[in-house]
Length: 298
Image (tube, rainbow, N blue to C red; front, side, top):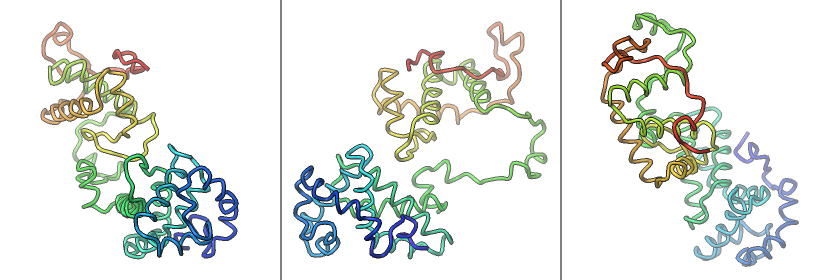
C-alpha cells in the first residue's frame, strides 16, 4: 500500500473527493482566494503546477486555514490539501523506505497531522513547510537518532532496556516493587525542597507542568527542560501561575538543571532527625491529589 492508500485516496481520488468537489463553490464564497483556480477542484493540481508561486501559496494557504483544526476544522478541506501534497509525501516515503517496512503508514499519518495542525496564522509557505515537517516527524517516529537528538536531547541519549531483563537485578541492590511514578516524583521533589535544591514554588510549577503534559492534548511535542509539553500546555500553566510562557520555560530549565546536578539517595521514610528539621534521607511521600494542593488554580 502507498501513502495515498493509507489516507483512503485512490490515484484518481474521484470517489474519495466527490463530497469535497461539491463543497468547493461554498469554500470559494468563504475564501475568495480559492476562486483563482481554473476548473475548481478537478483542475487544482494542474493549476498549481503552472500558477505563479505567490498565487499558488495563497490558494494553498486558504485550504490550510480551512483544514486546520483551529481554523475551519473542515475534514474535507484537509483531505483536499493532503491529496494536493501527495507527490511530495510520496517522495519523502521513497527516500526513507530503507528505515521501515511501514514507511507509507508513517508518512501518511505525519502528513495528516501536519495538514490538520498547520500554523496558518504564522506561516505562509504551506507546501514547503508541511512536506519538511512530515519528513522530520517521520524520522522522529522511526527513531532516527540525529533528528531525535536535535528535537529532544534527553530522549536522544536514552537507551531502551527490557524492564524484565537481567540488567536491573545485576545493578540494583534493592527493587521497589510496584512503585507509583507519581509517588516517586512527589518524593523526589519533596526531598529537593527539604534540602533546598529547589524552592516550594518551583516544585509546584514543575508538578503543574507534568500534570498539564499528561492531561492536555499536544499539537506538536516540544522539549521544555526535558519535559514534553505542548505550547497550549505551557500557556495553560503559565496563566494559572500568573507568569508568561517564556518565564515558565526559563524557570523549568533552571529547576531541572538544579535537580540534575545533585545525587539523590534512594527514597526512604523520614528519619526522626529529619522530621525535626535536620538533614535526612529523601522522604517517601504519597502522590499529591491535584494542582490545587500547590496553590495552582484549575
